Amino acid sequence: MDCCPECAAPVSAQDRFCEACGRNLRVRRTPVGGPDSPAATRCACGGTEFDRDAFCTRCGLARGGGRDRVEFTLPGVAGVSDRGRRRRRNEDSMAFGRVRGRGVAAVVCDGVASSERAEQASQTAVDTALDVLLTAMQSGGDAERSTADAVVAADAAVARLARPEAPELAPSCTYVSVVATEDSATVGWVGDSRAYLVAQAGAACLTSDDTWAAQLVAQGVLTEEEALTDRRAHVLSRWLGADSGTDAPRTVTFRVEVSGLLVLCSDGLWNYLPEPEDLLEVLPRGVTPVEVARELVEVALKSGGHDNVTVVVVQLRGGHGA
Image (cartoon, rainbow, N blue to C red; front, side):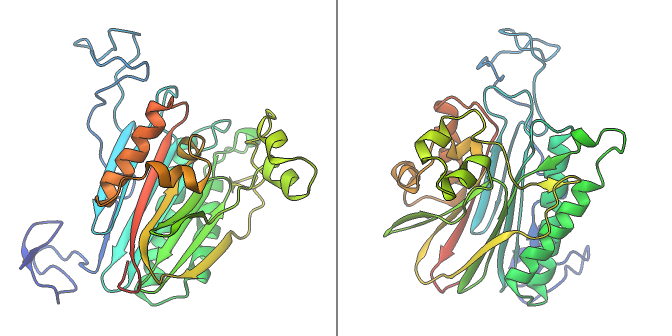
C-alpha cells in the first residue's frame, strides 16, 4: 500500500485520485515556483559562519536561502540547482514530473544575466513548459509537438514579464527539455543549456548551442579554438523572452534501446565539462540520479563555481520505461 504524497493517506497503485484530498495520483512533479530550500550553509565567498542577523562573518553578505540551493527527487529523476560561488543569486530553474505509466518530462532554464528578473524568467519558463509537457503526456500527445508547444507557451509567458518602458532589459532565459517515454526520448532546446546522453558504451551531447561562437564555427568562419577564446563566445543567438523572436525549438528524438542517463544542465556545469568524455570521466556509477546530480554540481563548485549550476538527471531503462 502506498501513501498519497499530498496528505499521506493510504492509496493503491490503481487509484487515479486520492480519496482523502483529491490529489491527482497519476502525476507527480516539482512544486510550481520551485522546490523549497533551507537557509544556505555556505556563503558565496566560501564562508560557513553567520552572525545572529544572518550576515556572513567573513565577507558581510546576507545569508542566502530560497533559491540558492535546491534539490528535488522523484522516482527515476532528480535535480540539483546551486547558486555557485561567484553569483549573488541563482538565476537557473528546473522543473520535472512523472506521469504514471507514461514517462518523465524535465526542463532546465538559465536566466540571462544581462536581463532583469532573470530568475523569474527561468522559473516562469520551466513551470509553464512543464505544465504543457505533462498535460500532453497524460493525453498521449506527440512528444515533438508538445515540446514545440511548451517552448511557444514558455516564450509567451516570459515575454509577459517585460516592462514596456525597458524593452532592452526584458526578462529572458535559455531552455532545454526532455520527454522520455518507455521507448523514446525527445530533447528540445533554445540557447546554450545542454542535454547529454550517457550509456555504458559512451556519452554524447544531444544539443548544439545557439550562440555567436557556435554559429561562426558551423559556418567555417572561425575554428572552435578561436571562437571559444573570443569574449563574445557565450553571446546567445536564440533565447526565450519578449525580444527573442523564437517560434520553435530545435529538437532531436531517439529510441531508448539501452539503459543510461540523460543529463540536462546549464552552462555552469558544461563550462567545466564541455565534452561528453569529460562528463563520462567524472560521472559516478551505480548511484541514484540525485547522487549523480549532486556529484556533478560538486565538480562545478570545486572547479570554481563561477556561474549558477543546475543538473537534472533522468534514468533511462532501455525499453523498460523512464
